[in-house]
Image (cartoon, rainbow, N blue to C red; front, top):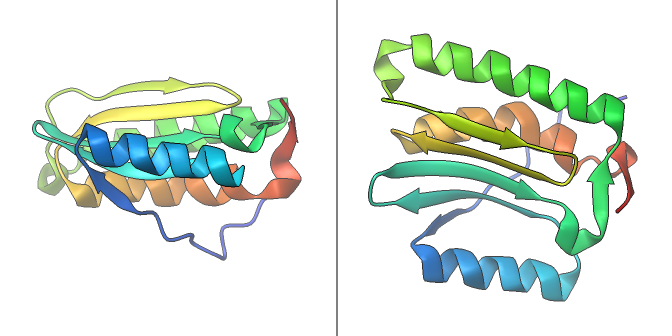
Length: 126
């Protein structure tokens, strides 16, 4: 059903302007927006399938939620990836996790869910 063998390269965008430009490019190309975002107070991981006109199937959404919860529990419990408070919002077309204290923590989240989110066999039309 899902494959994590191929880890996609997740870009890091710094600042609101860079994020907005990257999102606009995804919209122009009709592809998902997936990125690590760097802000003054930390990092975030975001996926948005709407630029591609897609959403996750219900079963895959449940898998993404499970993977994300597990990874965030590991990050919060890892003293080397200390973070104050992490919030998450996950739906069939959009997911956002913030504020992560480091790029390493954001990459862990991205690598836990991006391969599933970006697997086109897990999509349906939006």
